[in-house]
Amino acid sequence: MDEPRFDDHARYWRSPLVPGADMLTAEYREHEFSPHWHEAYAVPVIEAGAEMYAYQGAHHVAEAGTVPVINPGEVHTGSRAMEGGWRYRVFYLPVDFIGQLASEIASAPQPMPWFPVDVIRDADLAARVARAHRLLEGLSASTTAGGAAGGNPLGGDPLAAETAFVDAMSTLIARHALHHPAVRRPNIDPPRVALMKERLAADLTAPLSLSELAADVGLSPFHAARLFTQATRMPPHAWRNQLRLQRALAPLREGVTVADVAAACGFTDQSHFTRHFRRMFGVPPGRWQAGDAAAR
Image (tube, rainbow, N blue to C red; front, top):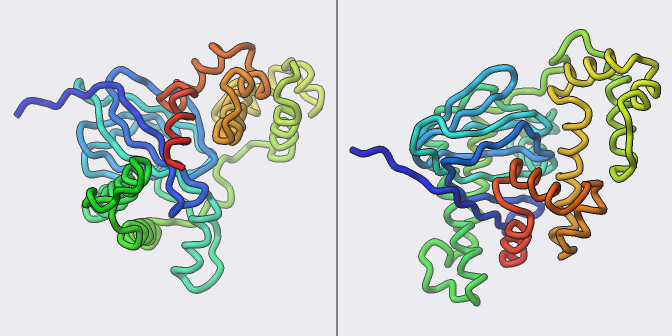
C-alpha cells in the first residue's frame, strides 16, 4: 500500500460543551512547529502517518493510533516523521478541567495530573479520543451550518458527544496520569527564575535587555541566560514571545483585529506576529480567528 501524502491544512475550533478548550483538526507535511509551549494540556491522537517531536530532552515518534500527550508549560516541537506527513486531532484542555476531573475520578482532591514523557501507545484510548473529537467536531460543524444537526450523523446528539468526551478524558487520566514530580530539574534557582518570568511578563510591549533582566536578579547576563534556559528549555526572548502568543488568543477570540493584537502583545509588526503565530499554531492568526468565530 502506498504511503499517504498529506497537505498542510488545519482548522481550530471550539465547542460550548468543553468550555475554555481549543480543538484542532489538521494534517501537515511541510510545516514544522518551532519550540513552543501551551498553557493547556495538549491531548492529540495520530490518525495517520507519523509525527516526530522533541520533548523533555529526547526525540519521540508518534505513529497512527497513539496519544502523545504534552503537559502544560512543557517546550516541544513537531514535524513529520515520514515522507507523507501526518494527520491528527488535538484537544487543548484547561489545567483546571483536568485537575477537577482527576479529583472526581478519585472522589478526593488530587495533585495536578502529569502524563508520561513517552508516547502513550494505547489503541483503545486512541479510539476513544478520536471518537470524542469527531463527535464534537460534527456537532460544531452542524451548528455552524445553521443548526441542521439532523443531517449530520456525527453531530446530531450533544449528549452522545459530551459523554464520549468525558469517557475519553477520564480513561486517559485513570490509565496514564502520574503525579507531578516535586523536583524535576535539579540545580536551578526557582526564586530567580520566577522573578525573571515576572519581569518578562510585566509589560510585553516594553523593550527589555538581557542586562536589565539579569540585574533584576543579581546575576551577570551570561548566568541569567543560562539559568533561565536550563529551567525553561527556552532562552528569555523566546519564552517571552511564547507568552505573547498565549496572551494574543483572548483578544483574537473577542474579534480584535490581528494588527491591533500584534501591537498590544509587543510584536514589532503584523508580519512578525503572523510568522511566530503560524510556527506555533500551524495557521495564520486571521484564519485561527475566523475558525474560532465560526464555531461560536
